[in-house]
Image (tube, rainbow, N blue to C red; front, side, top):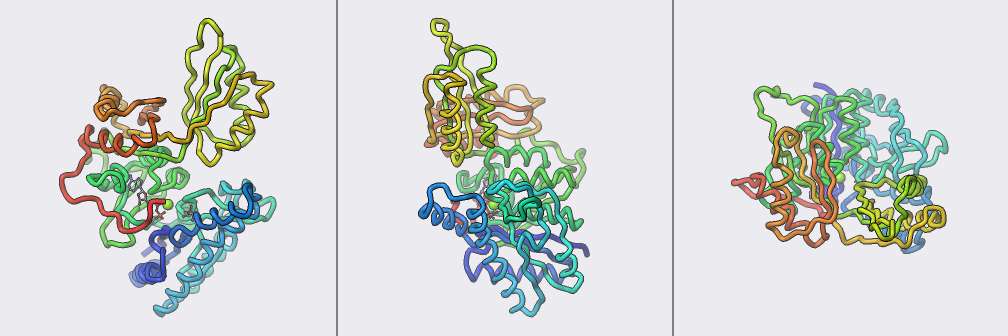
Length: 424
Ligand code: ADP
Ligand code: ASP
Ligand code: MG
């Protein structure tokens, strides 16, 4: 029996009952002979509540203090979980990210892991303990300050520890039975996927399926760590995410479409009246990049012949909206544009599947489904295994359901179960 890393999300440890339920599961894994490392998130919506609290005392909290505050959420759950396990008669020790050896760069609020040195975890395991690690946090190698990995970052902590400890599997426990063909909160007839390739999962996660964080899938793919996404509320097997299909590719026909993802966390900025000459796009996106903002989709309109001016629109996380507008306003003299428009009432719908590159007509059927549902498309982007469109936010749920049905993904059996969480 090898080492397993188990990660429990906030909805799984939302209250004392939840913590006790999870503690039993962890002890069961230990009783089965495994060495167990647990990564835990903050209880319920604690992180959101801490963010709200910070905003009440300061509109722009300093990154260092913000991270210090947010990591408190995970510290609460790790200590309570260790107590609950001890209460069941088993040894457990909790560790902060820093104590567990999660070393990051020094970018507050979205730090990247640069090394994992889990010496203390190894020692705790060797002494027969269950090791509990606070997710979503680390310590900067340079500044020695506490950092956080960005929202949903406990998934990344879990995979990073699994890689560093050479775990046989990284289990991600959440409030649904696995990865579905669409968010079960939106599509009741979503189907559970038994196995999905890292490649398709990466694309779903990058397109907004928050059941797994994009960076965690990236990490798992690089270090070849199999992930098992499953519910902490049921005993059902979940979804395996790995580079190679465990049953062999020959036996399992690759689905053309893996699923439909949606994302309402982005906003759109339109730079109006940009001179249509070389270097303009470079200047706009340099200003955005210098502000350390990641953008997603971009479109440039055909310029009006009479004015020689064009518009450039792009999408970015809503949370970065103010920063982007500030950066562009500061560079306005140098870029030369008329005005900026900001729209945070957009949503993105993406269809993902490695099979689509060899199946003509997928794009046409996707657009037809949206048109039949009366949904207007504002931006489009494609990759080899994904098509994404931006629509009005109000249309997103309807659009996801329409596309899910049009591609034959609706299940004809039970409705997908959502066991907990508030969907926040
Ligand atoms: P946790 O607190 O365990 O980290 P999250 O809220 O981050 O949980 O992720 C689980 C949620 O992800 C589910 O409750 C579901 O609403 C959402 N989700 C979005 N897309 C999918 C999908 N394709 N399959 C399963 N869940 C999805
Ligand atoms: N508690 C953090 C969040 O809510 C990290 C996590 O749950 O993964 O984003
Ligand atoms: Mg999560």
